[in-house]
Image 1 (cartoon, rainbow, N blue to C red):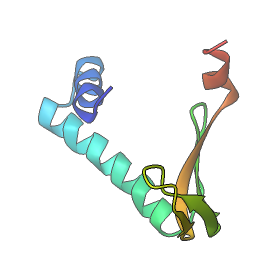
Image 2: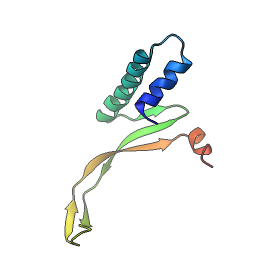
Image 3: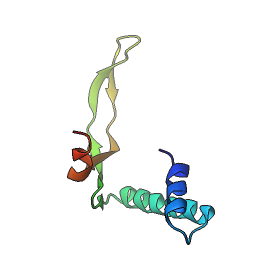
Image 4: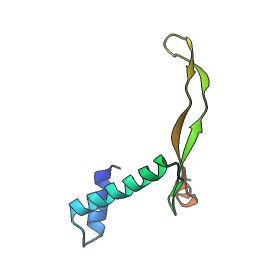
Length: 91
């Protein structure tokens, strides 16, 4: 599913919004989530899941092509944990 697909669904289900307004709404929601994560906040959407920024520590690894040992620097990554409602849909 893409942003355009989300916007189309919002447009089709909400009679008062144009397709362009629905697209802007999706962009605003995603921007809000992104801003929260960039500030290190936990973003929880009830009934869907939680986005959390995690710090990954520096570690040793290997270049898969050469086998040479190298250091993988620490970094931050986003982790998504689905809610029980979403998880139950996959069982």
